[in-house]
Image (cartoon, rainbow, N blue to C red; front, side, top):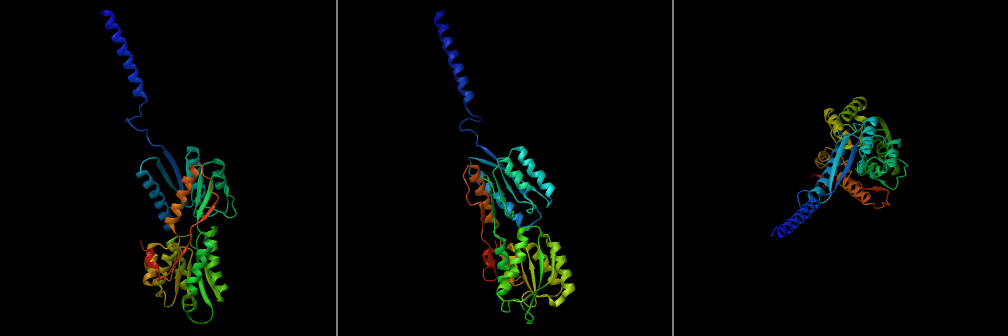
Length: 336
């Protein structure tokens, strides 16, 4: 009897040990293994930019929607470069040292590819957005998503040309304009400045630039510069070109304060198709703007990140999302 009890006790001990071994192999919480977490660092050149605010919100929403579906979870960290090269360089280097899985980078400065080269050297899959590096060769794990700024300038010029008087409000045969630029080192600012006027001259319009200054994409600066120009040149100014809608909003404030009326004695155009500006175009208090598709670009950027993470080759290294000319005829479509 004692021998039988000893055998039974030994069998129970073996079963108990086997059970313990099985329990150790079971993932925490029981059932399926925990989902993979992918860390993505997003560097924005400046949070205080109307367009990039929409852009980064769209990036966050894209990955939030993926997280809500279950499966792989995306941990997104978005940082503000404060339009400072040194600040952004430190932020991107921190992402690299932390070993993030991928990055989305909106460069403060595109005239020097030093930071972009550091990203290339890290081997981390990276999508550069919104600000294109001129004549840059993107490597196997990088690409660019943005829009061809030459088109946005061309559309601005076309909006003015399509007015009954082609922008020549006083009928003297010359369109006198002022130009409020973004960052002069930024290729988008350069192209919008050049191609808006090029469209007019290519179509036989005589032009004269009365005033050109840098507003650095800022609404308050745009208001200040346009107020200065209106004070200096008064009724001679027929067209106000702004490289973005933020500065155009400031320009509109200065125009109103000077007692001028858009569509009657002055024209005003911008770029980005911010909701406020589309509403103004519809109401006739802004001549037109150009849709810089924040949602389309953000989606394309996020999709490119996923492809790079999956090891897919992106053959189209420069992905341009088309601009759209916004006038009173179609402004309703872009009022969200």
